[in-house]
Amino acid sequence: MSLIRSTSVIGGLTLVSRIAGFARDMLLSRILGAGLAADAFFVAFRLPNLFRRLFAEGAFSAAYVPMFSQRLHGDGGLSEAERFTEDVLSVFVPILILFTAVFEIIMPGFVWLMAAGYRDEPGKFQLTVELTRIAFPYLFFISLVSLLTGVLNSMSKFAAGAAAPIFFNLTLISGALIGAWLRGPGGDDIVVARVMAVAITVSGIVQFVWLWFWTKRTGFKLQMRRPRLTPEVRELGRIFLPATFGAGIYQLSQFVDTFFATQLPQGSMAYLNYADRLNQMPLGVIGIALGTAILPTLARHISTNDQEQAWRVQSNAIELAMLLTVPAAFALAICAGPLVSAFYVGGRFTAEDAAITAGVVAALVGGLPAYVLVKVLTPGFYARKDTKTPVKTAAIALAFNIVLNIVLIARFGITGLAFATAISSWLNTFMLYGILHHRGHYRINPGLWQRLFRQLLAALAMAGALLWLKPHLADHYAGGVIERIAAIGALVAVGLIIYFGVAWAIGAVDKDRLQMLKRRRKKEA
Image (spheres, rainbow, N blue to C red):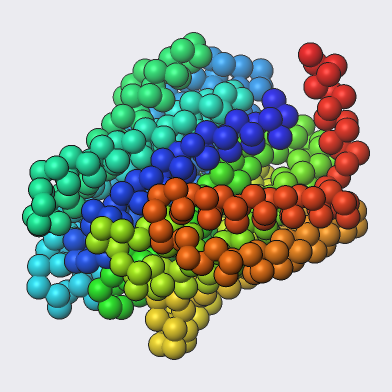
């Protein structure tokens, strides 16, 4: 399956998931708003979710997929890949059970460290601990989901894994509606928060059942064995542990962001979460899709010493990533106010809440291309079983992020925290590319540099059009549902037409490659 086709499958299903997640947060903003229960829930939601991104998806996939692909495409074939996965599973499951149990016990201390600002607010700290304990088992199930997704992705079956988060969001939407019904009019928001925490764990079970079904349908057989630390499992552990810390500055920095955000005025965690939802839309659709699609392909080319094809895959991923994320960053920064007003204002979420959230969005998306580039560049290390280098770059960027937080939060509050995340992510991106370039593993060719510059020019043209149009629609962003849809639809339509029209006209897209793809599709048909 080609990179574009793989990315389209993953990106399309991820887009559906992000839309469902958007609907979830639109519902939550109206039901929970930005009060005490919302802050407590979003910390409880964030902690297992961060462990999922850091351990289950980022680090584990980085270590497991290349090793699995090597066995699947080697002499042993499917049977050898099955044996390796069963050995991993037999060790992985007991570790997950122990890890979950330990954190359930030490949860008060862990929340005390992560949400230090809640300690002095009556009831808020206790509620955060309770909700986090309820939601934390989600990590166990989603880690198994990550293993099964890695199996399917390595077999070029991307759809089932990309569709799993849709069930996550649908489960949480159901939880929000049930919680609102149980609370009733004028009831306590804590009721909704508790039901939502239960829904998080239930969503992990639902996704695991879904992936298990599709893994069995491929003919892949899995059985639990007695735990054995085979040489392959030890090798996986040696790769996995450092990869945990190098899985991405975006994930690591969110631990730091949580600590700082909980020390800011009430509602800050909620503002950060709602802003990140807008940021996650393009990040998930583009960044996760590309990172997932290129890792097994890169691993295969590198294992056969096909340097030319490995460079081609990396270049295609960077070009596609920037073609989509550069305009997304400009558009989200310029239209943050209209978007937040149209999507979130209503119920318990006020216009004042929207103004603060819009500022956070504008700052956060300044690093959007960098967040995606990190996901595109790190597979160049992981495919070579090098997890130490991303550890070092992540550590440097994280230290820089902490310093920036201290400096910027004092001046800009929660918006300063978002600025710090964006700037430190760019630092991580430059370090990763610089090292790949220095080692001769990958270099951007002059033709790609020219197209990237033209993409920037096209994005600037789009930005000018949006700056002109935005005030003309100001009366409609917080109007009725039809008014909001029409106003945001107009902004999106104008942005897309101007950007891609200019991009095509000035050669920001490789037209020869598009023609070659068309001929290939006709030939396949």
